[in-house]
Amino acid sequence: MNSCFIFLVLMIRIRLSTMTSHYKCRSGVYPRSSVKRLNVSDDRVSWDSEFKDYNPPYYTSDSVKGKSWADPEIDTPNFSPKWNQIERDVNRKSHMGHYNIVNGYPLNPTGRTGLQGRGVLGRWGPNHAADPIVTRWKDVSRDILQFIAIKRGDTGEWALPGGMVNPGEKVLTAAIREFQEEAMNSFEASEADKENWKEKFKDFFSKGIEIYRGYVDDPRNTDNAWMETIAYNFHDETGAVVGNIKLQAGDDAIGVQWVDITPDIILYASHKDIIDSVLNKHQKC
Ligand code: RP5
Image (cartoon, rainbow, N blue to C red; front, side):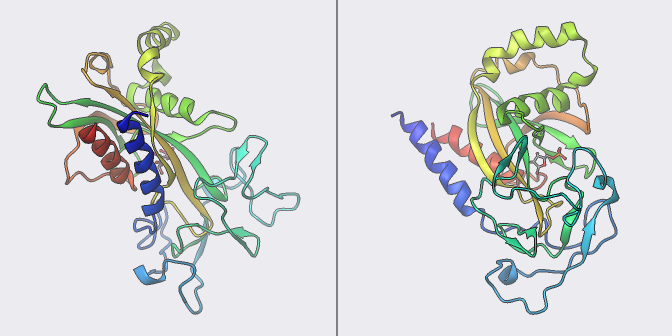
């Protein structure tokens, strides 16, 4: 077995086992609302640590209520989700293993967030996303690795151009589709352009390597609903292929560009951790 491959497998294990806490989803005001989370200190994040009378606010946004792509309220008659299982096209299994159900509600496997309900997330329990990480070296010295980042329309932060996995969709397919939508504005491309794109980059996007699978420290997470992702790296060692990608922000992205991966880079949610794994992989191989 190739040493790079062994290193990668080890890293994925490490990433899964080190995401033991969350920071961006346990203080302040919940995104797109005026609801204030109950403050949860570091030592009280774990469900195993004592937090007497823990009773944070409950919030589910009107934007997800009654939507066909979202779950109904937990106590809706005939709503009997199959927790920890794949239910028809809805994947309620967590990459983090078995999660608990308390009083009918799934519990965030990383711990308390200071908010009950589902916020703006569509699903109770895990909400599955896919993240593409397209990388190249900045120049021939191969000192600086760059990746394609998008600027999110909701928070204005730079992020991976990822998105939610559609019901029944393969995660890798979702990662490539999201890249096309957010970093290339495929929504506005002609059918001919899309066909052309497919031909040109088919080989490149068939070589994605899984970098991370698990929980995302996303500011939208709550005690009962949270983001998880599988992130794939598509690397262009010579830069010859991705140099041809015409970047144009699309869907809910308001900017797109190549970004140098530097120690001080600030990214949405826990995307920085994912990017660090990619950097480690390329520096060591
Ligand atoms: C993050 O939110 C995931 O890592 C992914 O990048 C993103 C998916 O949510 P939307 O961009 O569709 O809002 O947690």
